[in-house]
Image 1 (tube, helix red, strand yellow):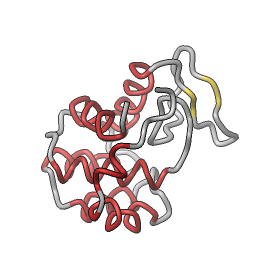
Image 2: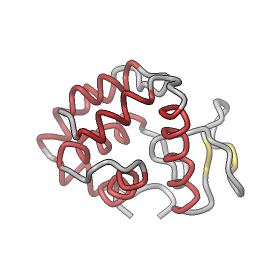
Image 3: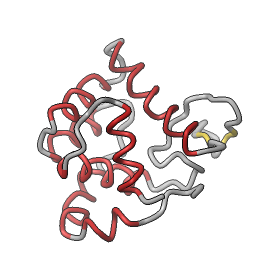
Image 4: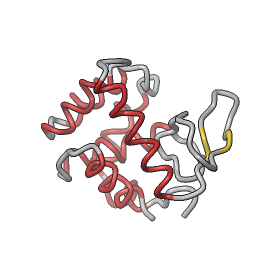
Length: 140
């Protein structure tokens, strides 16, 4: 499974449109996360049946695509529904298919932030989307 394919499923899971803008956001975010946790390209720490620790922070390896995707969707939805961690703004901007820089700024300002890396990756992902989007998700 490619990053692009995973991103499409993630966007559907949070009820956001699958648009070029949103795909660019998710692919840039995945690149910035840089992890290789199984079925967990955004490095969530959400517990799930069959999950194991990937690192000392608590990022999880998931046993399948379905479990990993559900955990990532659940992480964003939980925070958004309760207005925690800055996740509501991320979800709203994805649902609006806002400009990628604006959405990634929200990611950086949230608890999920990537230390500024997602915004730095954006121009490269925009210039060669096919390259960044075609990398496979760890676990596939």
